[in-house]
Length: 255
View 1 (cartoon, rainbow, N blue to C red):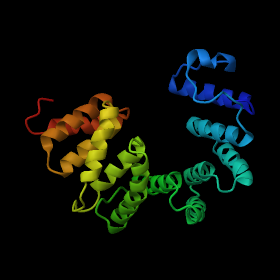
View 2 (cartoon, rainbow, N blue to C red; view 1 turned 120 degrees about the horizontal axis):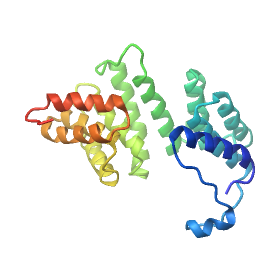
View 3 (cartoon, rainbow, N blue to C red; view 1 turned 135 degrees about the horizontal axis):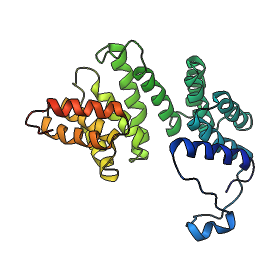
């Protein structure tokens, strides 16, 4: 239940719903108990809670990056060590090519809370995306790239240990093993991806990581099944195209 700043959040949510072709339904607080079970009574959000929720939605709409930073900054003025606000601000800075500021913000926060899973995950995400977004292409065997991927794994391992079904982190963790000379043991990554796919069997994105790992480990027939999942279920046209090529090249494949 959103009280403070409800009007603005409602507007942004409707914008996001239209972009994603979702159906948006408003439910009055006194009717919540009729449509859902609540662990705690509904209440109005505090100013900081409202700002964080609003910032998350504005990020998704992609309409106003400066507004995102302003919202996170408003929280940090009152709660300078709020992990969610720090994480959001770091990602916002990174998206605006302010990488030095993002790195410093996370470094300061992790110095005070080195085991915070959200901060660890955010640093890993930023390092990972910097490699993926390299305009000059990705050299999977470059020593600097391999070292970065190992750092990403180190950051994500305790995060996943605390939350074994954190799907985006699991996908990222598995993807890091496609770098280097393939000498690193990827058994944990394979097991994590398989377990996650039991929960979301039609996740084309997780299946993509699974296919890469199976190919890496020399299991072409199992990889072909994973590529089929990617082809039919991935949201990304790029991944579906990659799966089509893989299936055409797969031995003994009728696809």
